[in-house]
Image (tube, rainbow, N blue to C red):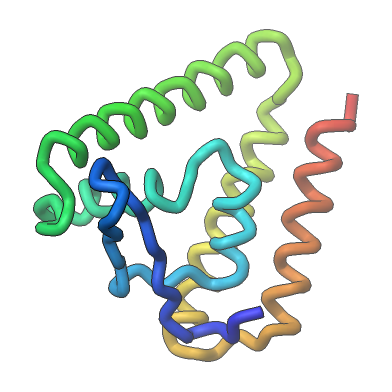
Length: 144
């Protein structure tokens, strides 16, 4: 495992099969990497959404057409996740308490990420957080 605070280079291939795009500026902790792995998004999609939300221009090593196509696909996936939450709530598969629990996880994860940026979170703490998030999600899914 990679220790927290260490930059992780993410390699992405794009339309030119012989080329790769390296994103050094995004640092994923073990916690965020675990969340991305278990999400519906790829690291590349997360990077593109992060890039947009940060107000950055498209990376120079990828064509603007490919970047905007992938941005559109990523945004459509976000919309799909939001629609999924709405239907799950409508079907009472997710109740208000579950939304509150998710909100608490988000708040605590955000605070933890700030600690990781300052190298204040140990590998053991990261594993504990991952286990806790996994357990909470399992309980949210199987509570009914």
